[in-house]
Image 1 (cartoon, one colour):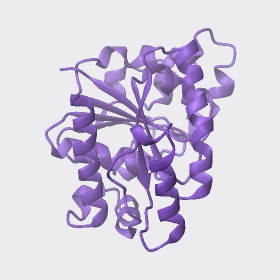
Image 2: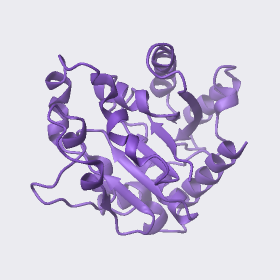
Image 3: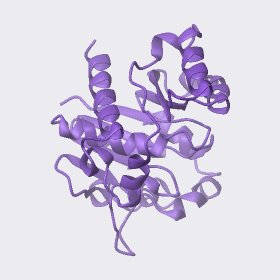
Length: 260
């Protein structure tokens, strides 16, 4: 089994990054893929969105990449309620890792070293990232082979893409020569608004982004938020919703891109 490691990242918050990790992972598992979701955001929203509830002393990603790094990878993996979909949960303690690792040699490779033993155990490892450029994000980029970029169809999100691409280029030059952008997934698309249509058109017109743009656009859909609130991916929560259809389509598109 060849493991594909995909970071879902955008330095702008509120673009649908975490729901994309959750629902893309769930959609891939429905297609028979074995998926691990790694929650590298101290807010732990991906953990909550998968319905994962931890005992107080249960090890999390912090115990893998933090200064002590005492836990084994196997100890931190938890099974979700759905077959083929596992998670490494996050914890608020992860927010202190940046300071705690400041003087640790090789701090940018803590995650890569921790997850090295998982190669071949999953079809996909999807990684959620904080909504900012931090040591945690750099750790994800140092490990991941691909980056999927959710882009809200809004001017601010579109404007932030250039900075993210520059960051990925810097990581590629200095830390991880294999990393590449797999695609840009438009999110919160509302065909009724001019601004959504204009930003989608801008993505289609910009030479830097056009080849990377997914044909699928995830439509603005309250069911996605409802599903996150109850800890169930939308593809399981309400299978006939726009959110479920869009993420199932995005999963199919992702597999097609990696098959080329």
